[in-house]
Length: 273
Image (cartoon, rainbow, N blue to C red):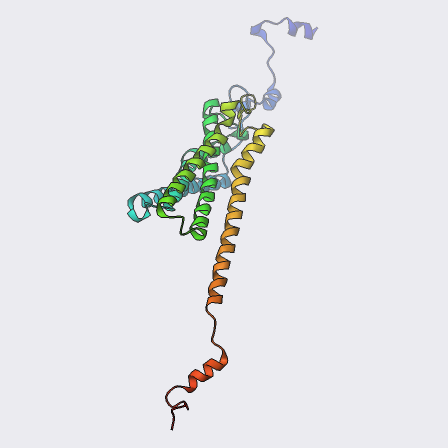
């Protein structure tokens, strides 16, 4: 009977829960951990540890940006640095400045979001991922270019003139950025996977297996192999030169040293007496 009265009650005579029901409701009192819509929010959003970590990351971003910017300003203002290999160093500094200015701040925002969800939209996700891959790949290949320049300077110092060195460095810088742009923009140009997932609010590098192999080999393993091979060749060339110089300086035999000592004044030479 009571059930039928409750089911037929009008809005004005609706059943009101007792105090114990209010205490169990997620919106009871609408305290710190709740919202009017019934969503339960976590407690304090940031702990002391989180604040310290964020502070250190912000300082790291600022230091990376300022340090590489200082390198660029120094190379631009000092005329003696307007030559190889400082232009390769400047190219590396440009890539690192872009990482600190465009990639690292958005990475920090993504890390601080709830569940590491990307809430900045699809377009900004593509910009972030593209610059991330572009600048990191360019930075790695610039290191490989510096290693090649050092190798040619040591092993081909006669043929590797200043003019040739300038042309080679300009070509290496162009190839570095062109290859980096190809690896970074391949998903957008050729539909090689998708970086943004609207359902999960995820923004990450394309997980297409073929692109993962292509980008990993082109952005890391290939330049790493170049650097290791080149520095191994530099070590062998330096070791060969050092050994040749040691063989060129041959000590005099002991008999010649004794004769030389005896021919001096007061040393008992043939003219003595």
